[in-house]
Image 1: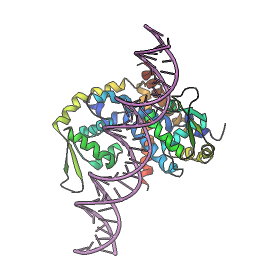
Image 2 (image 1 turned 60 degrees about the vertical axis):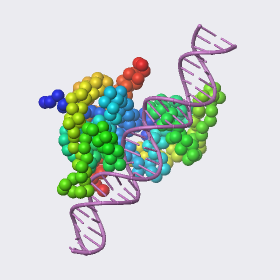
Image 3 (image 1 turned 90 degrees about the horizontal axis):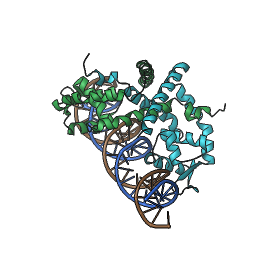
Image 4 (image 1 turned 180 degrees about the vertical axis):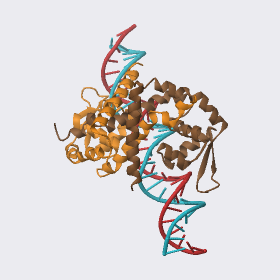
Length: 149
Length: 149
DNA sequence: TACAATTAAATTGTATGCAATTTATTTTTA
DNA sequence: TAAAAATAAATTGCATACAATTTAATTGTA
């Protein structure tokens, strides 16, 4: 028992979280390569499949990303033809992103991606549920911290 | 119930993992800024505090990072005076990284970092334990997948 | 209504991550 | 043992992340 124990990698909760998140996105890569999408582009498409249309700000709220990250991702997805950008009529500061027909079609092909990843993650249904709950509990608390400032 | 449900962000386990890991490193930042260290530099120092001396390859095995990421991190830590690099005597391909006196001293000051982060994470002792176990279970399985290739 | 404060995106700069390649060295093996 | 294969770091190139700044537009308010 040393006062340095809290600085040991094996006693950290943050480290396996960080390592695990990287391992997951790394294992997504070969699946997403088939569609020529990166992980960030993929989750941006997920928002678009659900919302059909959303501002950059809204997409950022869903994904916890700012315009510095999203702008190039959105431009890339636009150049691939999956989404379109146009200035908002209501508020000329805003940019509305909407899904194209090609973007909608992509969804059919990509349903196999989460299926393939599910097989990768080696948790029981119950464990996955626990993990899900714990992660969202942490995220929710950080959201609250971020709101108070 | 649609066949697209698996492509919904809220049904993904990977997404909260990704978002949570980012939220954690983001909240580390103000704590680490005081020491002029990034998160990656910080966990590299953790390995050095435990090991005193290790090759780039070994550090990478601990941290799940390759030389492409580690080389600049190690160079930065060297320029700050916390570690030193020298060619290995045994194997001239390898580089041995070892901690300096300044690096050892840093440890005393940084024990307050994990303490401060602990207060941030809002889980009970028990929940933290569960999360830890689940994350390492996933990591271990990915390690096994990666070993078979 | 002017004008200050705020807001939405884009831009800029720094630091990852990681695949792929290169270079130097060591190990295998024919 | 000489050539081929493998290995350790470094390098290169691309795509994030994110803080900080900039630009354009909108809101709040004196």
